[in-house]
Length: 449
Image 1 (cartoon, helix red, strand yellow):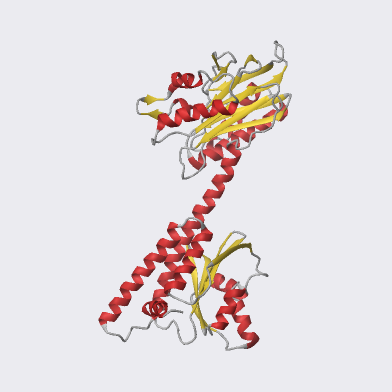
Image 2 (cartoon, rainbow, N blue to C red):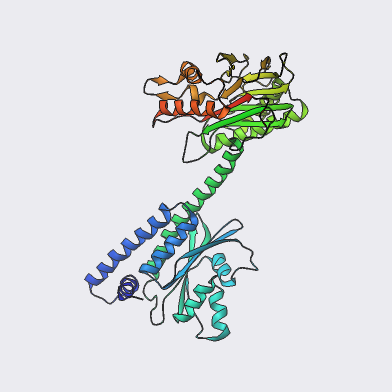
């Protein structure tokens, strides 16, 4: 180890109680600066594994010779560990009490800081070290550096001990006179790591919800070409209240597009439940009006569980057998949702809607259907109001701009049509705030598979 590193360790951990006031003041300033760096390190990096590795690197650089941070979240244990001369590393495992170091479990249970004196050699020393440190390289480094004591610091936040910080210094160097500083370090680290874990868990939940609400992978349906676009209002949450769904067989396809009141995770959970209710309804009867009626009854019945139960939706059913050669029968039911656009192969645009109220207002609401023919080359475009109500420098995007964006798109694949609309809306928005946006195109291509 270089002298400069050892000097940094001494500056922070030296017992200065009998030193001159100027030396104590300098140490206090150095400690405050280090605590700030440690706090910022774990708070700024929102990936838990990288946060632990960065923290271990900081501890080895300025404080100790061996460091391990172990945190537990549900069934998972994340460990960051390192030693002088090696690179910080981390690993994530499922933990069970029988397989984890016994002393580490006890430290988590007790939640009290302690300084553990290690036996000098033999099996007793090995057992003592491995009961705290879950890494072969770090255990070997403890022996190579002849570490005599381990500082064991609990990580406590929101009234629970969720992790343990284990620190070791080479032989001849102790933690004497530094307990107050180490307690402050553990407190700062615990607050930062707890926030990082909460953010990571929220992002994981949001990611799962988003994958279920946005059609990132379109189903393969014979005779249909499908494409979608999905953009959330709160990019930091990565999830919103707009939802899309396509399911069924080649000869009976259901397409659902909807928008619930609100934004973020709460709206996404509501949207997920509506989508599930719609899927359940199709098991009994696949008529779009029936599907929306069942969804409405479910939402009204469960309205007390949500701050806002209002939602809009369009349900479309596609089946072979239109009146024309090679056509498809399309049944459309709307619940307060923007009209479905039918882009004909000749470039003309029709609006399909039924005058029915939004979901969640009245338990006895009645929903009706209209039926049209989808001929080869025709495209259905379902979207949420995040498109038409997108606010730009000169007002909302509106229906007129949407129709304009579709001009000349007839005959293009569904992906090209969706991309053209998405680009037009994005250019109109610029960097301005926006609502959730969902868009799906369903094109009849008899040769598509």
